[in-house]
Image (tube, rainbow, N blue to C red; front, side, top):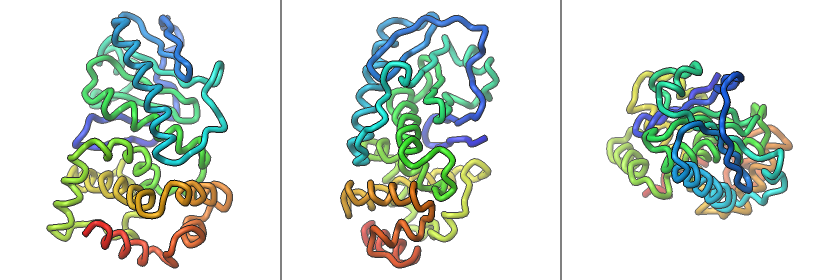
Length: 257
C-alpha cells in the first residue's frame, strides 16, 4: 500500500484495493475520457469534475511530452467516484485524514465534494500518477518514489507557489536533500512534516529541471528507457549529460541558483 501525502496540501492516498463498496448504487455521468459515479452531488459539481479532468488529461500529457497511444475511451475510460461527503467516503475504509484515493492500475479515483484542494491538487496529482505509470509501467521497480511523486506534483508546482517557497527556504538554509539519500526515501513512512513537504517539493523541482532545461522530447526518451531498460542510471546517462547521480545533483543545484 502506498500513501500519497503532501502536508502543505490536502492528503490523498493510493490503495491497491478498491475504495468502492460493491453494493452501493451510483448515478453515472460520462465524459470523453472519464466516467464520474455519484449519488447526490449537484450536477454542476459533477460537470465541473468532468471538465477539469478532461483538461488535466490533455494538459498533463502535453506538459510531460507524452504522446497518447492508449487513449482512455469507451470501456477504457478512467473512473471517478464522488461520495456525498467525507463521512460516506471514509466509510469505505479510508482513514479520516484522507481527502481522496486512487488505484492507478484501474484508473480509479475516489473523493467527495468540498474535499480541500480537490480541483487544484487532488485531480491533477492523481491523474498525473495514472498517466505516468501507464507510460512507464505500473510495476516498474526502476522508478524511484521521488520520480513518481515528482511527475505527479509537477503540474501542481507550475501554479502553486508554496512548492517553490519550500525549495527556496531549503536552499537558503542549506537543507536540500542529497540525491543519494532521496533515492532511498519513502515519504509514506516519514513523520516529520517539514521533511515530507521538502521531499515532494524537491521531487517536483527535479522533474521541472529535466523538462525545462533539456526539453520534453528528451524526458520522453528518458522515460521510455526507464520502461524498457528498467535501470535508472543507464536511462539517465543515455539521455542527459550526467555520468552519475552526483553530477545530476550538482547541475540541478546550479539551475536552482
